[in-house]
Image (cartoon, rainbow, N blue to C red):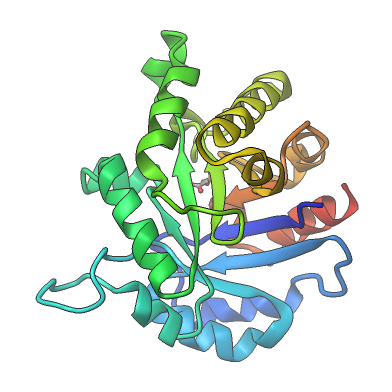
Length: 246
Ligand code: PGA
């Protein structure tokens, strides 16, 4: 049984005062875990404030544990601050910093070394979607971005069509089901049926309170990675409640 996961990605938003949003998130959940990934500056204070109510993660890490890499952060540092997860290969990292699949795989190894769960993001661009290349892109990103030894214990997959991120556009639930089912088949081919059955596959891209219910009712969707709507407790709370009820 896969435990559902509502994950929030605050991206480059949020000063200390934003931690007040945690006060009104739902508690007493029976079926789902909640993860919030704030800017690195807020990880330790968020962990201190949230306690066991939610998991806290980073948004990126370097592949190395230490070294002369100004401005980067090691997976060990995230863990030391209390993080349990790290988002890797987000499309904004891939676009803004030219991150390749091989770099994402190296970072996923670093996450494992530090005891973090890697939330590995994959997804096609609008041009690739329009060209009908979605499944080919997903296959090659999965093959390139997951290191050997990836397991359901140390990996979560987030399917995030680039054209759906921050745009208000969302694939149909049939399209989401098709891609998520395909991801599961690819995981089976690469890592075996146990990994395929047990790995949580999140959908991300313009998840809002108004569409969360139908997305969570879609086959092979085990939760969401939520950007903009995770910044406000009212919206993220409604999404969490919808997932817990799904
Ligand atoms: P969005 O972002 O929910 O604002 O579309 C999702 C993401 O980038 O993870």
